[in-house]
Image (cartoon, rainbow over all chains, first blue to last red; front, side):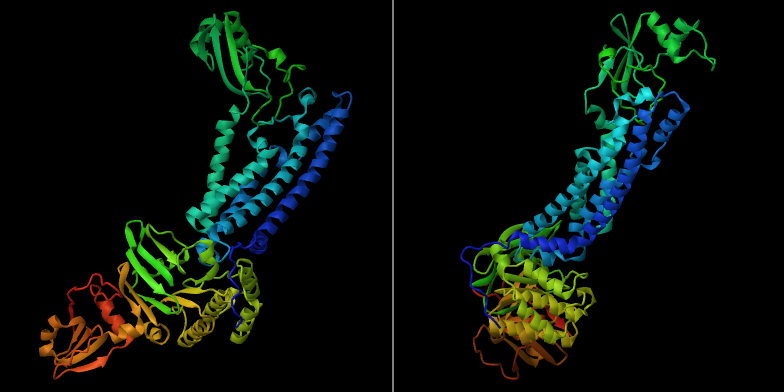
Length: 334
Length: 305
């Protein structure tokens, strides 16, 4: 039996690159799965995106836009790729990547007991953990980043400024479902899910429960961020113009009279009875919204609206609004 | 040099103490066996020694002062955990490559030669090997790292008698040829006599008996004689454990090397390691430790049969 190699006086640790093989060997199936599914998704989005951009170009170039031919092109664009349209289908992407790649990294070692092998090797436990988590996180985030570039390109036509005047579908960059897909957000969410997965794996020490917990925690975080945090992403605009763009995401609405706060939200029934009972009645037997606004402002009430511009939750526009004042902040000054 | 040295080492899981103020020193150059009832803290002690768990109090060092779990310690200690965990989906060749990549030293030629002798195919998945083969693979991986200390947690639990024999033969060869020190925990007392030359008996989270096997055996005797006279000796001699029949009584006594004459009507026998261990396991109050003794003088209880 050959003798043990001489002791190094200066104990040089096992080089990091040797761990690269280990990480690759143990996670190549997960990484391959992610690469294959993201690749397939990317190809689909790319092909759909080419069609969408094509249809958009055709619809915007059409002249005069009230002609039946143009209306056809416009509705073709509006009804195109319904699966991708509002982005909800792509929402679980980061969660799945995070849960399926992130959660098993440590949970499987702890579940099967192999951590007792891995962490007693010369490489060392902390370095081993880092050498697994960091490259996987980088790869996963890079893949998600590349995908988000594609998504950003795909959704571009919906964010163009002229859409409303042409009755083309419009979407807000702040919409709950689209915000998370574009720019750094998608990669960041993927990284978040990966981190949640890793943490859940350590705490729960079992693969399947860790995956479930990751999905649950991620869903909660996304819903909370979309519904409670996103509205603070930009400072909302405040306007006294009752004609808030229909695509606006309204935060709150209140009324003042003579510079004093009167009431918030909808006008109370009693006030309307008292002031506007003589207003002309609409087809439903009630005065229309517009008439009530007029009636109240004639009596000295001013309506205030704080909103995120061009931020309809659904991303649809009715296309019926007056042209020329879709999103310009200048003409909706308070 | 001590391969494992613990001072007032304690480990608590929740409210239970797995190990309590445990102090011990295992000298180098032995196959040291850690025995004790279930829950005595054997696995905890080994996990602490290899750095898998951190102590709640006290400290443990290995190989002459390296903190357990430090890079210097991990580099020269090989650990084969209970049930020999391996990556079941990796082939034997991949397991070799993996271990090679995770360590500064790995003797691939030795490992391949060993596996060849054992008839373990390199292409087979580790999970498809028999229990004995998995244990042998884990041991081979550990030995190919050329450790100075080999730590084995219940290596024989899963093995049939033949596999046990092969496994321990491999350990003994490494010990003889490479000078590897070995610390192992085991339930299988009968096997220990053949392999272990140092014994540590853990009970209730602390060391009850420790010492070189030859020394321990030399310091204990079994006296057999009429049961009626047994009581006379119970007080005078250091009786560890008394086993009484109707006519005969067998007293396991601590002679501590002195050669007191055997009383008339009594016979003296040397004690076997298994007998000695069982006697101490049955008497958790009794202790035999090298150096200044601790916790001696507990009254031995009697077991009738």
